[in-house]
Length: 448
Image (cartoon, helix red, strand yellow):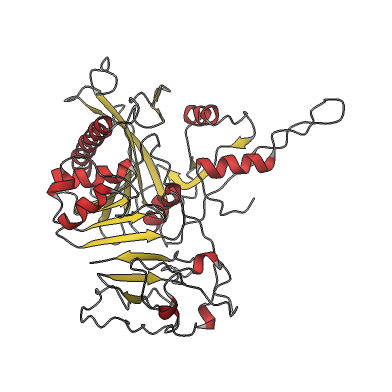
């Protein structure tokens, strides 16, 4: 099992199918099952070590909207943060025992076949306060998901100095385990426009409550319902003036709705989610990014098309070159972690006239993974560059590309511009991460 196998329901089930639960011998006897298959997350590329702590939060001002017999709204959230002195701290499991058991039941995984995967987060490790308070990012999962579904992205952000707060929306998430061992399952009614709109409103209310809690926590209060001991240095470690939010699917819609209602969230990202509620027409005046899989964009989602002109701040429409919405939750390294000297040339899905103007590749940054070398241009025309210098737009338009064009990651080639009929597209290829140990997936992005 490669060490960088990304965690997702699809990945885990695929690994299960490849491993087999038992070996059937002649005569119908089953051999002893092999040791449980262990799946791991990719190692974060940033310089910071990672700590994590879970909080049980109770909102006394609201009843649970999905289980009316519950007189209060209970949430489980986890804070992931840059940490120090982690060597004597155990790592957190991907799911808690009752959650993992339910996960196996939901996905027909026989007990003992898969071991619960470990994360890179160390339980209740002291907070690394070097460099001052850390910017905060909130995360909301997709409908029927849970707060641990995007652990890969969460760990990567934390490794570069962010505090990431992940939220389980109880009875909307697939399974939520509370400190007393109680397991609350998904009870939300089946999807309809009305249900999804109400669910997004409830999620936004959950998020605003969490923002209130973070403010109290930063002042030294302990909001945990059991008053658990908090990690050393947590109070005062949050720079709440720099708070952003991202979410997958309905979590992305939650990010937009929360931004509409609460100006404490300064920027947001929607990973492949349809928008719901008044934000679609009201829009936003702060930075917001749309990130989609190959099969989803403003051409086939009316809510994206309607919201786009109402985004009055900085905006970006980013399309991943991979089919399927789950890829926005579990991106996996698809190319070598070190530059190769292969002369493999990337191909483009742009028009032939655009390809004829491309510049030759830099062999130092050429890659062996042909699939990830495809650059999709949202306009269907344009040019891109694989060299370290910028490409020249083919259009006669006098519009200048945005300021991000021409930047390059440390040690990687510059971004190139594609000037189309209506808007600019930015295509990345072969750009290494800040630590120089991984590749950024090729994508297309509409910026205006």
